[in-house]
Length: 162
Image 1 (cartoon, one colour):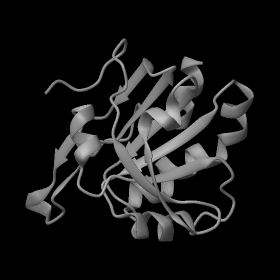
Image 2 (image 1 turned 90 degrees about the vertical axis):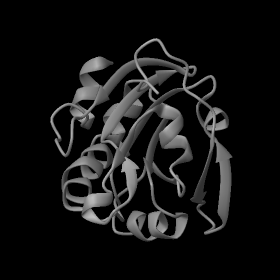
Image 3 (image 1 turned 60 degrees about the vertical axis):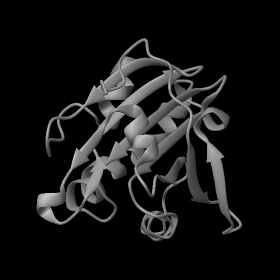
Image 4 (image 1 turned 45 degrees about the vertical axis):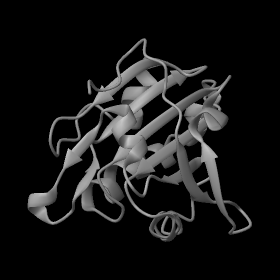
């Protein structure tokens, strides 16, 4: 399957997250993004160094700037279970805008064509590092990293595309 690209429609799929009341929720991507301008970014794993120290903090720190430029939702996806994503989210008490979404079986990551097989490292199938700018389900910018790089998918790259 080809990776998602500019001009494509964001596929639908179900993801899990914990809401403000600490209740486990299931939501379709289309319910989160339909009729909205959203940033969807993905990382290979919760609590991993580049994800935890660079990629996620960049979006948390840029949340207000992104919102000021018309972004309705900032959605983070990772191939982890919702309990891990909840615990990871709690390590960022300053977070006001990033929603941590779990793609436990990598089904949504597969629908995006962005799987990264890290089985040799004992991590199984994960997500490539990426960021997408999406307007009413249509991809306007697709920043997809190669391998373990972090050069084109940060918050600053999305801000440049706005």
